Each structure stands twice: as structure tokens, then as C-alpha cells.
Length: 507
Image (cartoon, rainbow, N blue to C red):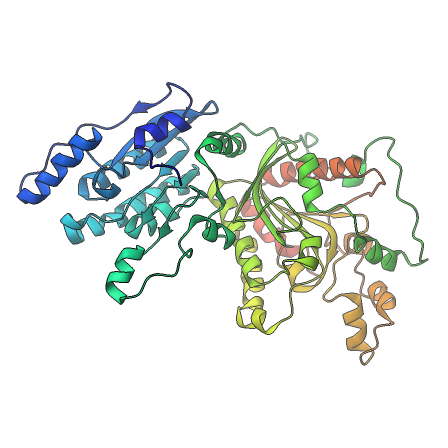
């Protein structure tokens, strides 16, 4: 990787030119410290031109005002002692008071050993300030630089709502040199590398310095701009049916070919090339930033978590990409844990949550059972039912089993015309009820009332989006429908919305 930048060089590379304004008051050398420590502090000051291992202030990224806290690794390895902790906490508190998004860019070996336990416990105080900042609804973004380890990694470096990392950066709790000194063997190579953490969903993305300002600007474009929600008709909290949102002049899809509309819908949703989440986001989102190591590419992500802007409204997207589940990443407990992080993110950022259901079903395997698949489905349901953010759920295609149920609870539920929701794939239901015979699948699908029309009649779905042959028009209609429903849900106080999430199922 390239040579390590100083804190001020980092700021010059990331912030809009000339926009940085420092917040830091000078820090005098403390009384009562050892001669060796005093000499080390003086040498660090002379070498870096800084008076501590962090600097803070405000600037702009892509025109958006942000607060920044940046480590100076050249100052005693970016370590955090009491004075540095005071500066970090003060900057976080000021960012909160001024309502600013906060970018933290740590590069640190962790706690300052010369100050011992007193320095170590400062991480609690910094964490409390970050939690308060997030609880106030302000974005907290992290760019973890090489290296970020120890107590810094285990506190303010790991609390980002969006966490990016420098390519090749060493990121981990215990530094490899310390591990080897304590255990006598080297730490396995590559485990603590940024790219490995991104593959495992612990870092949202690995972004080089040249691309970082643009990437951060895309995040801030979603998080730091006024909402322009699709208007709901005055005098009503209920939006018009989604069927009224169909694009004028669009041609409907051909009528069912099987003679059984429900079974025909099942077959349509399984066809290769049917519109999926990836297509929807690529062709309708005004902005999208994938998180949790997911990417906007059906070949890689069975579940997609990201920040998006749809129909003028910023939101968190948690959705299933059907093709990837079949070919690469079946829906398992890890994917549902990623979904739950998306739910929490919507709550922290006070953004609407959009869930997109399109799954052939959660994976059936010993590993999934041992990984807690059933428990993760239950926790998804519990999280959604308790989330105060407005929730809109979209049944986009297949809705099979617990994997679909995990994303269903919402304030408003949309379904495309041929979407369906069932406790098992119809073939599985047939096998259960007919002693292993799957030939009754179509009959079971009809009798179980799994189609979008039956779901609407039963009150499970609020509105149906008609399907048209023109994929772009179909995607645009879906996006507009989601915007209408987000506006409707957002217009109702959470105290009224939460009970209604379950009342729709009362019979």
C-alpha cells in the first residue's frame, strides 16, 4: 500500500479545497509525568507539528458540511491517552450540538501504554459520546486507515453507520506483533486485512483515497439532503392504490397461459430474466450505497443492505436478490444478521426502511440450523415489529417460507401483480399433504391463497402494482409506488403505526 499520509494531508485529500476549520485548543504538556514520557511527547510534537494524536474540526465534502476527527499516526502511533480522548469527546459532542454528520478517520495502535489503565478506560467515554451522537439522529461515518487496532478499533472505529476502510489496512483488536509476542506463533496472514473484513460484512467497503471523497459525497447526498417525498392526497393518510400508479400507455403482460392464475404467477416469478432488486435499484434509485460488504450485483449478494434515494426520499433498503440466492449465496443466518443491521441503521438514522422480498426460501442445511437460522428469523420479526422508523415492504416475486416472513412486517405492504407468499414452495406443501407427491403443487397454491390478489383480499397486502412488459416502466412504477407508501407511513406517528403492523393479521 502507499505511504501513510499525515492527518492534515488526509484532510487536504478528502475535504473540499480550503474548507477545513480546526476546532482544537492547544494542549500543554501535563505535569507529573515521567521524564521518558515527556521526552517522547516532545519528540512526537517536533516530528509531526501536532500537539496530540488526533485533530478535529469541520469542513465540506461534495458541498456537505461535516465534522471530522482524524488520527495522526506519527504521534506515538496514533495512540489515545487522556488528552487525546478529551479532544475526541469534545469534537463528537460539538458535532452533535451543531447537528453535523461526523467523519472519523482513525489510524491508531490503540491505548497509550505510557498512561496505562486510565488511558484504556477513556474508550468508554468516547463510545458514550458516539452513541449520543447517533441517538440524536446524526450520521457517524468511519474511514479506518492503516493500521487501526486495539481499544480504538474496539470502540469508536467500529461504531460507524457506514464503515469504509483503506485498501490493505490492518484492522483488528489485537495487533499481530502483540499476538506473536504473547503466543510465540505468527497471527494468520490476511485475517485482519480490510479486504477480508469487507468479504465478511464487517466493513462496508474498501475505498482508495482518490475515490473516497466521491464515495463519501454519495453517502451524504442520501443522508444530508432535505426529503422530497411523493405527496399523499391532502386530507387522507391512506395513499391511492398502487394500481393507479401504472404508467400511462404501458402494455400489460400476456394473460396466464396455464389457465390457473395463481400457478401461472408462481411460474412467472421463477423465470430467468424477471426483474429483480438489482435491476430495480440500477434503473430507479437516485442514489445507492451498498453496505455490509454487499454489492449491487446479483452474482454476489443474496441479501442487499444499503442506503438509497427513491422517488425523492432517502431510505434504508434491505432486500433479497433472487438469482444470487439460487446460484451463489443462499439465504442463511448470516444474511439475516446483515438484514437486522439494516433495520437498526434505519432506526439510528431516522430513515424509512424498505424491505424487498424475493426468495426461493432460506437454506435448509445442518450449518444453517447450527448457525441459528430459526432464531434469526424470529429476531428479524421482533426487530421489525419494534422499529419506530416507517417500514414499507415490497413483495417483488417469490415469497417462500421463513426467509420471506423475516422481511414482511411493515406499515404498508406492496405486491407486484404476480408476487406470492407461502409457508413453503407449493411443491413442498404438496409433498407434505400428499405423502411425498409434488404433483398437487398448483392445487395447493390456489387453496392456500398465496397470490397477490388473495393476499390483498385477506388484508395482508395493501396495494398491488400491475406488471407490464416494459421493464423500465415496470421498475419506475414500483419506485413511485414505494415513494407513495413511504410518504403515507411517514405521515403517521410511530405510536399509531406499530400496533397496526400486527392488527392486519387479526381474523
